[in-house]
Amino acid sequence: MVQYSIPVGIIAVLALIFAWPHDIIVMSGSLITLYGWSAVDSPGLLLSAAAPAMIVSCIAVMGTKTAALPLSISLAVTGVLSIICFVLWELWLGSSYGRSSDMEPLLPLRLWRNRIFIGTSM
Image (cartoon, rainbow, N blue to C red; front, side, top):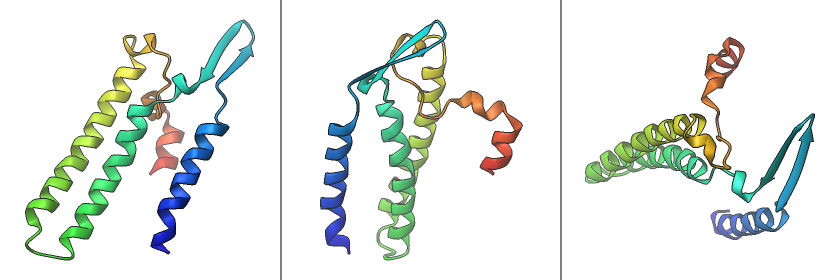
């Protein structure tokens, strides 16, 4: 089963690259927005994928060998730093400075002000 995960992942990434629309113009009222690859929050996507991968790898390494303690500690620290960097990146992207870019935040942190969102996320 493991030997098929890499080719399937490569095919999925290639399908995403070729199927993603280059430019879409969305008109709602008087607002015209252009979406495409420039709107994808690539750093946020990378950080949000790296954090759980590092933490799960840390747990997996800790369960196998006691000699791998430095590796597991470094994986845990890297995972926690990825989470912190993700939150800081999303805060910056949602701020007035980050709004000058075309990217949309992966997780708009203003959602955490909504009690319904908090309740369903817990």
